[in-house]
Length: 201
Image (cartoon, rainbow, N blue to C red; front, side, top):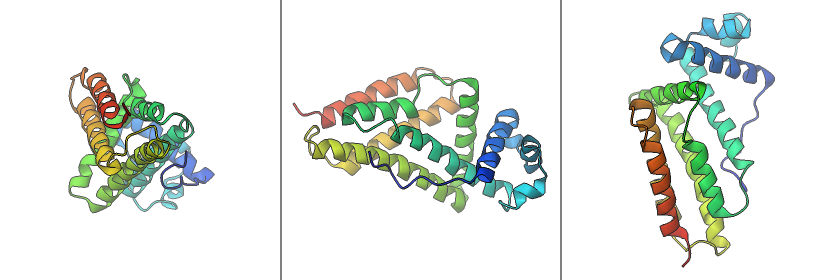
């Protein structure tokens, strides 16, 4: 399928720094993250990181963009068939039933950073872009289903925004509570909602 806004080209140096940031976050969490610890993961000097990024926040904003770019790239390469199956696939990818320890740590870090968007306009812009890209992925699949005659002619934006808001709520609940039944229930509910909204009788 034609995906949302084009995926970025990451240089080898950027890839190395992003991977080092990922591992440093796993080891130390957001509170313990520092340029020094990322440099240690790279086995390079702090200056080599400051050459590319002005500050830790600047680096973290790039890491968010990188992580989402990689994630949405993986979704795009696995869709393009039946539009309803593609919607199921996207929901399964963004709301997996279980997270391993590393995935759980990264989800916690990302939602910790999302809290910064309340008062920091730069973080707000980044998370707006993240939600926009997920919305565009969903919107593209839904519109393709309508154009193919497989879906009813619905208000694509309304359905898309409902799904994005529900996904965000479930992800937030997962990282901030111990309510383990939330994600499975939301997945079933979302698929039921999409079936009722989109399927032709």
